Image 1 (cartoon, rainbow, N blue to C red):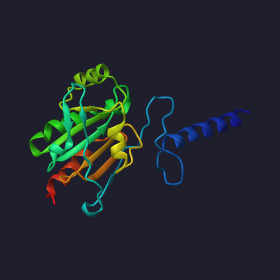
Image 2 (cartoon, rainbow, N blue to C red):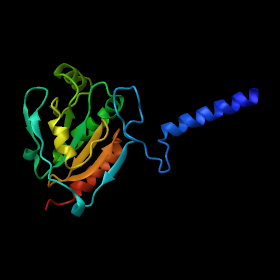
Image 3 (tube, rainbow, N blue to C red):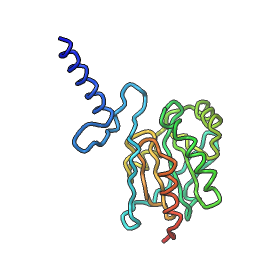
Image 4 (cartoon, one colour):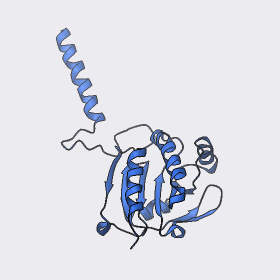
Length: 197
């Protein structure tokens, strides 16, 4: 009887481990791999596109949480990092210091970071921005128009998702889920080395 219980317990643990790793033959995690947490997470996988295969250009405009107008068309010729987030999203909070560091470290090199938040009211979003000392704006996207515009060019299947635009405003990379600072910096470095067409 103890052996049977041990086998059942072992099978349950293996099942949980398989679920956390995404299961399936390809090992890919699905956007709904975290349930009952109020967010959808990706696995942090990055996809990049060669210059000739990039879609776009993408131009987003709207109002940030301080009421200021923001338009990515003003940043044409620069690298733009777009990040979907909301205040109570655990991976959003985990990646915030890396995004803040990127925005600060690359500001003089023609890199702009723009958050997109379709969930929070201004108070919650501003509290998050104060807590993490976020130096870049975030679009208040309560109507979902910014994400819908992005969806027409690149799928946004998780929160957070980070999309990096090249100097021509085309989609060069996408990270589903938590963006690791080193991965994001490597993508930005590669794009800074390119010349706009």
